Image (cartoon, rainbow, N blue to C red):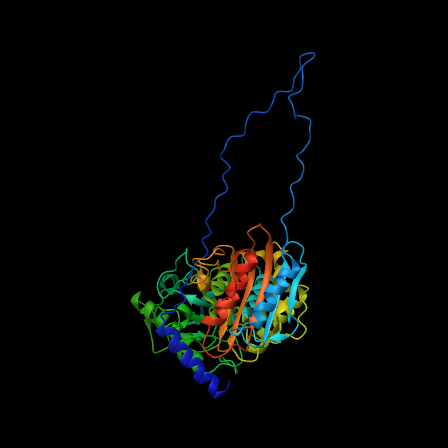
Length: 469
Protein backbone atom coordinates (compact mmCIF):
# COMPACT_ATOMS: atom_id res chain seq x y z
CA UNK A 1 0.00 0.00 0.00
CA UNK A 2 1.42 3.43 -0.91
CA UNK A 3 2.52 6.07 1.61
CA UNK A 4 -0.34 8.26 0.41
CA UNK A 5 -2.83 5.51 1.13
CA UNK A 6 -1.40 4.87 4.61
CA UNK A 7 -1.53 8.60 5.40
CA UNK A 8 -5.10 8.75 4.13
CA UNK A 9 -6.01 5.71 6.19
CA UNK A 10 -4.67 7.27 9.41
CA UNK A 11 -6.36 10.58 8.59
CA UNK A 12 -9.60 8.76 7.89
CA UNK A 13 -9.40 7.05 11.26
CA UNK A 14 -8.86 10.37 13.03
CA UNK A 15 -11.90 11.83 11.25
CA UNK A 16 -14.03 8.83 12.12
CA UNK A 17 -12.94 8.84 15.73
CA UNK A 18 -13.53 12.54 15.93
CA UNK A 19 -17.03 12.10 14.62
CA UNK A 20 -17.66 9.44 17.20
CA UNK A 21 -18.23 6.59 14.75
CA UNK A 22 -18.03 3.39 16.74
CA UNK A 23 -18.83 -0.12 15.59
CA UNK A 24 -20.45 -1.96 18.49
CA UNK A 25 -20.33 -5.70 19.07
CA UNK A 26 -23.74 -7.26 18.45
CA UNK A 27 -25.34 -10.66 18.73
CA UNK A 28 -28.08 -12.10 16.56
CA UNK A 29 -31.17 -12.25 18.75
CA UNK A 30 -33.94 -12.24 16.20
CA UNK A 31 -37.43 -11.53 17.61
CA UNK A 32 -40.55 -13.17 16.39
CA UNK A 33 -42.44 -16.17 17.70
CA UNK A 34 -44.74 -18.38 15.69
CA UNK A 35 -47.76 -19.00 17.91
CA UNK A 36 -49.07 -22.53 17.83
CA UNK A 37 -51.38 -22.27 20.83
CA UNK A 38 -54.47 -20.82 19.13
CA UNK A 39 -57.23 -23.46 19.08
CA UNK A 40 -58.50 -24.67 15.75
CA UNK A 41 -62.28 -24.40 15.21
CA UNK A 42 -64.15 -27.71 15.49
CA UNK A 43 -64.58 -29.53 12.19
CA UNK A 44 -67.90 -29.36 10.43
CA UNK A 45 -69.67 -32.67 11.20
CA UNK A 46 -70.19 -34.83 8.13
CA UNK A 47 -73.96 -35.25 7.65
CA UNK A 48 -75.34 -38.75 8.02
CA UNK A 49 -79.10 -38.19 8.06
CA UNK A 50 -80.95 -38.90 4.79
CA UNK A 51 -81.42 -35.82 2.72
CA UNK A 52 -78.88 -33.82 4.67
CA UNK A 53 -77.37 -30.94 2.75
CA UNK A 54 -73.61 -30.34 2.69
CA UNK A 55 -72.62 -27.05 4.31
CA UNK A 56 -71.90 -24.44 1.58
CA UNK A 57 -68.31 -24.56 0.39
CA UNK A 58 -67.39 -27.80 2.12
CA UNK A 59 -66.64 -29.56 -1.18
CA UNK A 60 -65.62 -26.46 -3.10
CA UNK A 61 -61.91 -27.33 -2.97
CA UNK A 62 -58.96 -25.09 -2.12
CA UNK A 63 -59.22 -21.36 -2.73
CA UNK A 64 -57.88 -19.82 -5.91
CA UNK A 65 -54.16 -19.02 -5.60
CA UNK A 66 -53.35 -15.39 -4.91
CA UNK A 67 -51.25 -13.32 -7.28
CA UNK A 68 -47.50 -13.99 -6.89
CA UNK A 69 -45.34 -11.40 -5.19
CA UNK A 70 -44.30 -9.04 -7.99
CA UNK A 71 -40.74 -8.56 -9.14
CA UNK A 72 -39.37 -5.04 -9.53
CA UNK A 73 -39.27 -3.95 -13.15
CA UNK A 74 -35.85 -4.61 -14.69
CA UNK A 75 -35.89 -1.27 -16.53
CA UNK A 76 -36.55 0.59 -13.30
CA UNK A 77 -33.74 -1.25 -11.55
CA UNK A 78 -31.37 -0.47 -14.38
CA UNK A 79 -32.27 3.21 -14.17
CA UNK A 80 -31.57 3.18 -10.42
CA UNK A 81 -28.22 1.46 -10.96
CA UNK A 82 -27.25 3.90 -13.70
CA UNK A 83 -28.05 6.79 -11.36
CA UNK A 84 -25.67 5.33 -8.76
CA UNK A 85 -22.88 4.92 -11.29
CA UNK A 86 -23.32 8.52 -12.43
CA UNK A 87 -23.37 10.00 -8.93
CA UNK A 88 -20.45 12.26 -8.09
CA UNK A 89 -20.00 10.73 -4.63
CA UNK A 90 -19.46 7.15 -5.78
CA UNK A 91 -16.45 7.41 -8.08
CA UNK A 92 -15.67 5.96 -11.47
CA UNK A 93 -15.39 2.24 -10.69
CA UNK A 94 -18.69 0.69 -9.59
CA UNK A 95 -20.18 -2.80 -9.90
CA UNK A 96 -23.88 -3.38 -9.19
CA UNK A 97 -25.74 -6.68 -9.43
CA UNK A 98 -29.29 -7.45 -8.29
CA UNK A 99 -30.91 -10.88 -8.58
CA UNK A 100 -34.22 -12.42 -7.63
CA UNK A 101 -33.77 -14.46 -4.49
CA UNK A 102 -36.50 -16.90 -5.52
CA UNK A 103 -35.42 -17.83 -9.04
CA UNK A 104 -31.83 -16.55 -9.11
CA UNK A 105 -32.63 -14.51 -12.22
CA UNK A 106 -30.27 -11.55 -12.60
CA UNK A 107 -32.39 -8.42 -12.79
CA UNK A 108 -29.64 -5.85 -13.26
CA UNK A 109 -25.91 -6.15 -13.88
CA UNK A 110 -23.77 -3.05 -14.26
CA UNK A 111 -20.09 -3.91 -14.42
CA UNK A 112 -20.65 -7.07 -12.42
CA UNK A 113 -18.04 -9.17 -14.24
CA UNK A 114 -15.17 -6.76 -13.54
CA UNK A 115 -13.07 -7.73 -10.48
CA UNK A 116 -12.96 -4.94 -7.89
CA UNK A 117 -11.45 -4.56 -4.44
CA UNK A 118 -14.18 -5.92 -2.16
CA UNK A 119 -13.05 -4.72 1.28
CA UNK A 120 -14.87 -6.68 3.99
CA UNK A 121 -17.53 -8.12 1.70
CA UNK A 122 -14.77 -10.69 1.01
CA UNK A 123 -15.66 -12.10 4.44
CA UNK A 124 -18.76 -13.60 2.82
CA UNK A 125 -16.53 -16.05 0.94
CA UNK A 126 -14.72 -17.08 4.11
CA UNK A 127 -18.01 -17.42 6.00
CA UNK A 128 -19.63 -19.63 3.36
CA UNK A 129 -16.47 -21.70 2.83
CA UNK A 130 -16.09 -22.36 6.57
CA UNK A 131 -19.74 -23.30 7.00
CA UNK A 132 -19.54 -25.64 4.00
CA UNK A 133 -16.18 -27.26 4.74
CA UNK A 134 -16.23 -27.48 8.53
CA UNK A 135 -19.97 -27.67 9.16
CA UNK A 136 -22.01 -25.18 11.20
CA UNK A 137 -21.83 -27.26 14.39
CA UNK A 138 -18.06 -27.84 14.42
CA UNK A 139 -15.97 -26.50 17.31
CA UNK A 140 -12.24 -26.26 17.97
CA UNK A 141 -10.39 -27.48 21.05
CA UNK A 142 -7.79 -25.86 23.27
CA UNK A 143 -5.88 -28.59 25.09
CA UNK A 144 -3.38 -29.20 27.83
CA UNK A 145 -1.27 -32.35 27.51
CA UNK A 146 1.48 -33.89 29.59
CA UNK A 147 4.68 -34.51 27.69
CA UNK A 148 6.50 -36.14 30.57
CA UNK A 149 6.81 -35.96 34.34
CA UNK A 150 6.33 -32.38 35.43
CA UNK A 151 6.13 -31.04 31.87
CA UNK A 152 2.81 -29.84 30.41
CA UNK A 153 2.00 -28.19 27.08
CA UNK A 154 -0.77 -25.72 26.21
CA UNK A 155 -1.85 -26.56 22.65
CA UNK A 156 -3.65 -23.96 20.52
CA UNK A 157 -6.39 -25.39 18.31
CA UNK A 158 -7.69 -22.27 16.59
CA UNK A 159 -9.71 -20.53 19.30
CA UNK A 160 -8.67 -16.89 19.58
CA UNK A 161 -11.74 -15.94 21.61
CA UNK A 162 -10.77 -17.60 24.88
CA UNK A 163 -11.92 -15.90 28.06
CA UNK A 164 -9.21 -15.03 30.55
CA UNK A 165 -11.54 -16.24 33.29
CA UNK A 166 -14.40 -18.72 33.25
CA UNK A 167 -16.12 -19.50 29.98
CA UNK A 168 -19.61 -18.20 29.29
CA UNK A 169 -21.97 -20.70 27.63
CA UNK A 170 -24.07 -17.82 26.29
CA UNK A 171 -21.14 -15.95 24.71
CA UNK A 172 -19.39 -16.41 21.40
CA UNK A 173 -16.29 -14.43 22.30
CA UNK A 174 -15.47 -16.12 25.59
CA UNK A 175 -17.39 -19.38 25.22
CA UNK A 176 -14.32 -21.32 26.40
CA UNK A 177 -12.40 -20.04 29.42
CA UNK A 178 -8.76 -20.41 30.41
CA UNK A 179 -9.85 -20.47 34.05
CA UNK A 180 -11.93 -23.59 33.37
CA UNK A 181 -8.96 -25.13 31.58
CA UNK A 182 -6.75 -24.29 34.57
CA UNK A 183 -9.28 -25.82 36.98
CA UNK A 184 -9.32 -29.12 35.12
CA UNK A 185 -5.56 -29.12 34.63
CA UNK A 186 -4.87 -28.45 38.32
CA UNK A 187 -7.31 -31.20 39.27
CA UNK A 188 -5.63 -33.73 36.95
CA UNK A 189 -2.18 -32.80 38.27
CA UNK A 190 -3.35 -33.13 41.88
CA UNK A 191 -4.74 -36.60 41.18
CA UNK A 192 -1.32 -37.58 39.84
CA UNK A 193 0.41 -36.05 42.85
CA UNK A 194 2.15 -33.39 40.74
CA UNK A 195 2.57 -29.96 42.33
CA UNK A 196 5.34 -28.46 40.18
CA UNK A 197 5.48 -28.20 36.39
CA UNK A 198 7.10 -26.43 33.49
CA UNK A 199 4.71 -25.04 30.91
CA UNK A 200 5.32 -25.07 27.17
CA UNK A 201 3.24 -23.49 24.41
CA UNK A 202 2.46 -25.30 21.16
CA UNK A 203 1.17 -22.78 18.62
CA UNK A 204 2.40 -24.67 15.56
CA UNK A 205 -1.07 -25.33 14.12
CA UNK A 206 -0.63 -22.42 11.70
CA UNK A 207 2.38 -21.77 9.49
CA UNK A 208 3.93 -19.03 7.41
CA UNK A 209 3.92 -15.30 8.19
CA UNK A 210 1.52 -14.07 10.86
CA UNK A 211 1.14 -10.72 9.08
CA UNK A 212 -0.08 -10.44 5.48
CA UNK A 213 2.12 -8.60 2.96
CA UNK A 214 -0.85 -6.38 2.07
CA UNK A 215 -1.35 -5.08 5.59
CA UNK A 216 0.19 -1.81 6.72
CA UNK A 217 1.89 -1.07 10.05
CA UNK A 218 -1.14 1.08 10.79
CA UNK A 219 -3.46 -1.91 10.52
CA UNK A 220 -1.72 -3.45 13.53
CA UNK A 221 -1.09 -0.21 15.42
CA UNK A 222 -4.70 0.93 15.10
CA UNK A 223 -6.06 -2.42 16.22
CA UNK A 224 -7.68 -3.46 12.95
CA UNK A 225 -5.80 -6.75 13.13
CA UNK A 226 -3.73 -8.93 15.46
CA UNK A 227 -0.94 -11.20 14.38
CA UNK A 228 -2.58 -14.44 13.28
CA UNK A 229 -2.14 -17.24 15.81
CA UNK A 230 -4.05 -20.40 16.79
CA UNK A 231 -4.66 -19.29 20.38
CA UNK A 232 -5.45 -15.93 21.98
CA UNK A 233 -7.44 -14.36 24.79
CA UNK A 234 -10.30 -12.07 23.70
CA UNK A 235 -8.98 -11.81 20.12
CA UNK A 236 -5.70 -10.45 21.56
CA UNK A 237 -7.36 -7.18 22.63
CA UNK A 238 -5.50 -5.16 25.23
CA UNK A 239 -8.71 -3.42 26.34
CA UNK A 240 -12.42 -3.46 25.61
CA UNK A 241 -13.28 -1.33 22.61
CA UNK A 242 -13.92 -2.10 18.95
CA UNK A 243 -10.38 -1.43 17.72
CA UNK A 244 -7.91 -1.45 20.64
CA UNK A 245 -4.19 -2.17 20.35
CA UNK A 246 -3.58 -5.93 20.21
CA UNK A 247 -1.04 -7.97 22.12
CA UNK A 248 2.21 -8.21 20.15
CA UNK A 249 2.41 -11.99 20.68
CA UNK A 250 -1.18 -13.29 21.16
CA UNK A 251 -0.16 -16.93 21.69
CA UNK A 252 2.44 -16.19 24.37
CA UNK A 253 0.07 -13.78 26.11
CA UNK A 254 -2.44 -16.65 26.37
CA UNK A 255 0.27 -18.94 27.74
CA UNK A 256 1.44 -16.49 30.42
CA UNK A 257 -2.19 -15.86 31.39
CA UNK A 258 -2.68 -19.62 31.75
CA UNK A 259 0.50 -19.96 33.85
CA UNK A 260 -0.79 -17.31 36.25
CA UNK A 261 -4.12 -19.13 36.55
CA UNK A 262 -2.33 -22.37 37.42
CA UNK A 263 -0.30 -20.60 40.12
CA UNK A 264 -3.53 -19.20 41.56
CA UNK A 265 -4.70 -22.81 41.91
CA UNK A 266 -1.65 -23.93 43.87
CA UNK A 267 0.40 -25.34 41.00
CA UNK A 268 4.03 -24.20 40.97
CA UNK A 269 4.98 -23.20 37.42
CA UNK A 270 8.74 -23.06 37.07
CA UNK A 271 10.04 -20.25 34.88
CA UNK A 272 8.17 -18.70 31.99
CA UNK A 273 6.35 -20.57 29.19
CA UNK A 274 8.50 -21.52 26.21
CA UNK A 275 7.48 -22.64 22.74
CA UNK A 276 7.60 -26.35 21.91
CA UNK A 277 5.76 -28.93 19.85
CA UNK A 278 3.64 -31.42 21.75
CA UNK A 279 4.37 -34.98 20.62
CA UNK A 280 1.52 -37.19 19.46
CA UNK A 281 2.23 -39.46 22.43
CA UNK A 282 1.51 -36.72 24.98
CA UNK A 283 -1.16 -37.60 27.56
CA UNK A 284 -4.34 -35.44 27.51
CA UNK A 285 -5.01 -33.62 30.77
CA UNK A 286 -7.78 -31.10 30.03
CA UNK A 287 -9.55 -29.29 27.21
CA UNK A 288 -12.17 -26.64 26.45
CA UNK A 289 -14.18 -26.07 23.27
CA UNK A 290 -15.03 -22.94 21.34
CA UNK A 291 -18.36 -21.69 20.10
CA UNK A 292 -19.65 -23.41 16.96
CA UNK A 293 -18.60 -22.44 13.46
CA UNK A 294 -22.01 -20.91 12.82
CA UNK A 295 -21.71 -18.75 15.93
CA UNK A 296 -18.15 -17.70 15.11
CA UNK A 297 -19.20 -16.88 11.54
CA UNK A 298 -22.10 -14.81 12.88
CA UNK A 299 -19.64 -12.93 15.12
CA UNK A 300 -17.24 -12.12 12.31
CA UNK A 301 -20.08 -11.01 10.03
CA UNK A 302 -21.59 -8.75 12.69
CA UNK A 303 -18.35 -7.20 13.95
CA UNK A 304 -16.34 -7.53 10.71
CA UNK A 305 -13.45 -8.72 12.88
CA UNK A 306 -10.44 -9.32 10.66
CA UNK A 307 -8.49 -11.47 13.12
CA UNK A 308 -11.28 -13.98 13.66
CA UNK A 309 -11.85 -14.17 9.90
CA UNK A 310 -8.20 -14.94 9.16
CA UNK A 311 -8.19 -17.72 11.77
CA UNK A 312 -11.37 -19.23 10.31
CA UNK A 313 -9.78 -19.16 6.85
CA UNK A 314 -6.79 -21.11 8.14
CA UNK A 315 -9.10 -23.74 9.63
CA UNK A 316 -10.64 -24.16 6.18
CA UNK A 317 -7.14 -24.65 4.77
CA UNK A 318 -6.22 -27.30 7.32
CA UNK A 319 -9.47 -29.12 6.66
CA UNK A 320 -8.54 -29.21 2.97
CA UNK A 321 -5.07 -30.58 3.72
CA UNK A 322 -3.37 -27.28 2.88
CA UNK A 323 -0.95 -25.30 5.07
CA UNK A 324 -2.55 -23.09 7.68
CA UNK A 325 -1.06 -19.98 6.11
CA UNK A 326 -2.29 -16.94 4.20
CA UNK A 327 -1.67 -18.68 0.90
CA UNK A 328 -3.21 -21.94 2.06
CA UNK A 329 -6.26 -20.19 3.48
CA UNK A 330 -7.05 -18.08 0.43
CA UNK A 331 -6.56 -21.06 -1.89
CA UNK A 332 -8.82 -23.22 0.28
CA UNK A 333 -11.58 -20.61 0.52
CA UNK A 334 -11.70 -20.07 -3.25
CA UNK A 335 -11.55 -23.83 -3.88
CA UNK A 336 -14.44 -24.48 -1.50
CA UNK A 337 -16.52 -21.73 -3.10
CA UNK A 338 -15.74 -23.11 -6.56
CA UNK A 339 -16.80 -26.55 -5.38
CA UNK A 340 -20.20 -25.15 -4.49
CA UNK A 341 -20.73 -24.23 -8.12
CA UNK A 342 -19.78 -20.55 -7.96
CA UNK A 343 -17.73 -19.16 -10.85
CA UNK A 344 -14.53 -17.75 -9.31
CA UNK A 345 -12.97 -16.70 -12.62
CA UNK A 346 -11.03 -13.48 -12.04
CA UNK A 347 -11.26 -13.74 -8.25
CA UNK A 348 -8.15 -12.98 -6.20
CA UNK A 349 -7.89 -13.04 -2.40
CA UNK A 350 -4.86 -11.43 -0.75
CA UNK A 351 -6.22 -12.51 2.64
CA UNK A 352 -9.48 -13.91 3.97
CA UNK A 353 -10.80 -10.74 5.58
CA UNK A 354 -10.55 -8.17 2.78
CA UNK A 355 -8.17 -5.97 4.77
CA UNK A 356 -5.07 -6.54 2.65
CA UNK A 357 -4.51 -4.61 -0.55
CA UNK A 358 -4.66 -6.84 -3.61
CA UNK A 359 -7.96 -8.72 -3.34
CA UNK A 360 -10.29 -8.43 -6.33
CA UNK A 361 -13.73 -10.02 -6.76
CA UNK A 362 -16.36 -9.63 -9.47
CA UNK A 363 -19.52 -8.16 -7.98
CA UNK A 364 -21.46 -10.92 -9.73
CA UNK A 365 -19.50 -13.51 -7.72
CA UNK A 366 -20.83 -12.08 -4.45
CA UNK A 367 -24.43 -12.34 -5.66
CA UNK A 368 -23.90 -15.80 -7.11
CA UNK A 369 -22.38 -16.93 -3.81
CA UNK A 370 -25.42 -15.68 -1.91
CA UNK A 371 -27.74 -17.38 -4.40
CA UNK A 372 -26.00 -20.72 -3.80
CA UNK A 373 -26.05 -20.22 -0.03
CA UNK A 374 -29.72 -19.26 -0.07
CA UNK A 375 -30.59 -22.52 -1.84
CA UNK A 376 -28.73 -24.72 0.66
CA UNK A 377 -30.28 -25.44 4.06
CA UNK A 378 -26.87 -25.64 5.76
CA UNK A 379 -25.42 -22.52 4.15
CA UNK A 380 -28.55 -20.39 4.40
CA UNK A 381 -27.58 -19.59 7.97
CA UNK A 382 -24.81 -17.34 6.66
CA UNK A 383 -27.41 -15.06 5.05
CA UNK A 384 -29.79 -15.27 8.01
CA UNK A 385 -26.96 -14.26 10.34
CA UNK A 386 -25.93 -11.15 8.40
CA UNK A 387 -26.39 -7.90 10.34
CA UNK A 388 -29.92 -6.49 10.12
CA UNK A 389 -30.26 -2.87 9.00
CA UNK A 390 -30.82 -0.38 11.79
CA UNK A 391 -30.35 -3.01 14.46
CA UNK A 392 -27.21 -5.12 14.49
CA UNK A 393 -23.45 -4.98 14.11
CA UNK A 394 -21.97 -2.88 11.34
CA UNK A 395 -25.48 -2.03 10.06
CA UNK A 396 -26.68 -0.91 13.48
CA UNK A 397 -26.18 2.76 12.67
CA UNK A 398 -27.47 2.60 9.08
CA UNK A 399 -31.10 2.73 7.90
CA UNK A 400 -32.11 3.46 11.49
CA UNK A 401 -34.88 5.94 10.68
CA UNK A 402 -35.58 4.89 7.10
CA UNK A 403 -38.21 2.58 5.57
CA UNK A 404 -35.67 -0.17 4.80
CA UNK A 405 -34.91 -0.68 8.49
CA UNK A 406 -35.23 -4.37 9.26
CA UNK A 407 -35.66 -5.27 5.58
CA UNK A 408 -31.94 -5.45 4.76
CA UNK A 409 -29.37 -8.02 5.88
CA UNK A 410 -25.93 -7.28 4.51
CA UNK A 411 -22.15 -7.38 4.91
CA UNK A 412 -20.46 -4.01 4.84
CA UNK A 413 -17.07 -3.16 3.36
CA UNK A 414 -14.98 -0.08 4.06
CA UNK A 415 -11.42 0.82 3.13
CA UNK A 416 -9.82 4.01 2.01
CA UNK A 417 -11.32 4.50 -1.46
CA UNK A 418 -13.59 1.45 -1.17
CA UNK A 419 -17.25 1.25 -0.16
CA UNK A 420 -19.17 -2.00 -0.62
CA UNK A 421 -22.34 -3.70 0.57
CA UNK A 422 -23.68 -7.16 -0.26
CA UNK A 423 -26.70 -8.95 1.11
CA UNK A 424 -30.44 -9.41 0.88
CA UNK A 425 -33.42 -7.07 0.88
CA UNK A 426 -37.14 -7.73 1.10
CA UNK A 427 -39.20 -5.37 -1.03
CA UNK A 428 -42.28 -3.74 0.44
CA UNK A 429 -44.28 -6.11 -1.76
CA UNK A 430 -42.51 -9.03 -0.07
CA UNK A 431 -40.05 -10.08 -2.80
CA UNK A 432 -36.67 -11.41 -1.68
CA UNK A 433 -33.75 -9.88 -3.63
CA UNK A 434 -29.99 -10.45 -3.56
CA UNK A 435 -27.72 -7.48 -4.23
CA UNK A 436 -24.12 -6.33 -4.20
CA UNK A 437 -22.61 -2.89 -4.77
CA UNK A 438 -18.84 -2.44 -4.90
CA UNK A 439 -17.20 0.95 -5.50
CA UNK A 440 -13.42 0.82 -5.30
CA UNK A 441 -12.37 4.27 -6.48
CA UNK A 442 -14.49 6.54 -4.37
CA UNK A 443 -13.53 10.24 -4.18
CA UNK A 444 -11.49 11.59 -1.25
CA UNK A 445 -13.57 12.56 1.74
CA UNK A 446 -14.31 9.33 3.56
CA UNK A 447 -17.21 6.92 3.71
CA UNK A 448 -20.15 9.22 4.39
CA UNK A 449 -20.91 10.25 0.81
CA UNK A 450 -20.51 6.84 -0.88
CA UNK A 451 -22.47 5.13 1.87
CA UNK A 452 -25.36 7.54 1.45
CA UNK A 453 -25.50 6.73 -2.25
CA UNK A 454 -25.36 2.96 -1.66
CA UNK A 455 -27.93 3.11 1.14
CA UNK A 456 -30.32 5.19 -0.96
CA UNK A 457 -30.05 2.63 -3.77
CA UNK A 458 -30.85 -0.23 -1.39
CA UNK A 459 -33.74 1.81 0.02
CA UNK A 460 -35.12 2.07 -3.49
CA UNK A 461 -34.76 -1.68 -3.94
CA UNK A 462 -36.91 -2.06 -0.85
CA UNK A 463 -39.55 -0.01 -2.63
CA UNK A 464 -39.55 3.31 -0.84
CA UNK A 465 -40.11 6.55 -2.70
CA UNK A 466 -36.78 8.06 -1.69
CA UNK A 467 -34.23 9.26 -4.24
CA UNK A 468 -30.47 9.47 -4.36
CA UNK A 469 -28.98 12.28 -2.26
